Image 1 (cartoon, rainbow, N blue to C red):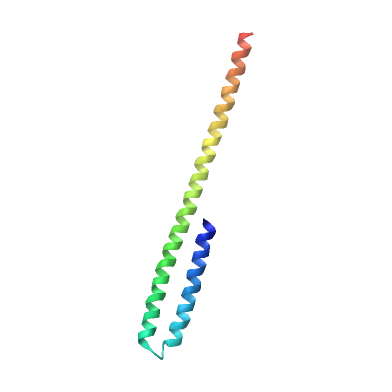
Image 2 (cartoon, rainbow, N blue to C red):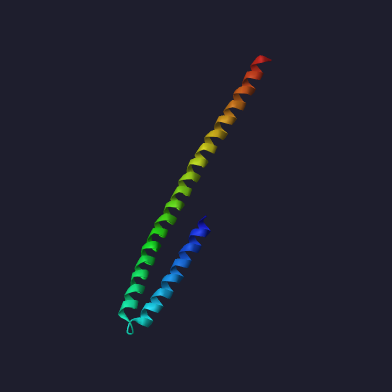
Length: 95
């Protein structure tokens, strides 16, 4: 999933770069076309900002998930060890 987001961000950057090149090419020739490319470049910036926010949010969620998972597994291991110890103690008392 992260690689897909990174790919989309790279594609957005490449598109924006192409749009800016076209905008510069038409800057002196046709103001209307230049303005259309400028609008597209602005939209690319907006998309890029949202992609960065999404990417960071996903990374934060993954980090929080890993922390929670590690805590659960640590508790599970501790509980499992305690259960086995209690079971061994119980068996020893039965003898």
